[in-house]
Image 1 (cartoon, rainbow, N blue to C red):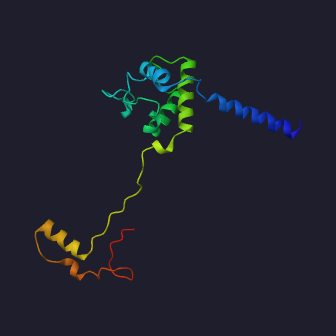
Image 2 (cartoon, rainbow, N blue to C red):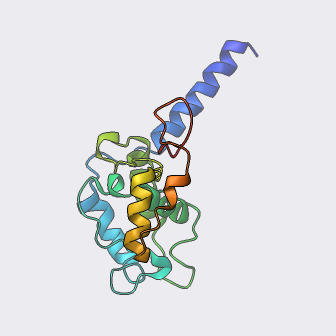
Image 3 (tube, rainbow, N blue to C red):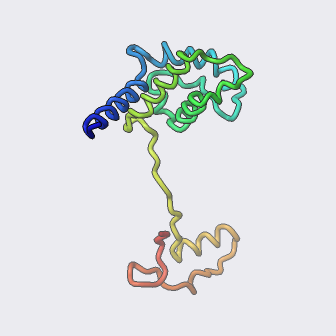
Length: 166
């Protein structure tokens, strides 16, 4: 078999897999996905008594995935792997499960990054300079001993004590 024929077959398989995760045309969260979540998930994952500390009933609208992508990635994995709903509960039909998985996969793969919550990153605690340290000890302990007077001079770059926490 020619190499180009093998490549064409692989590309056709990839294109088929890509189409498999596309939700059907006209699928919306409120009209198509949320009713399935109400039917199969909200009994256990509502605001009143959320199992596993996961509450899904407060998510509404088309941009629910952007509100908390980590939760929806977990929902996707649990539903796709048939972990949720539990075996003892009512199960979605294969078409319903495929609709939920397809919609979530599509939304998670096409996140609008401008709508994601911002993470400021790590915040470094600032060190106190000598005057701030003396005032803090005075305010906390009620003594005026000025212990920071024995510290190295507050530096501006060359050496000594500075307040750069990093």
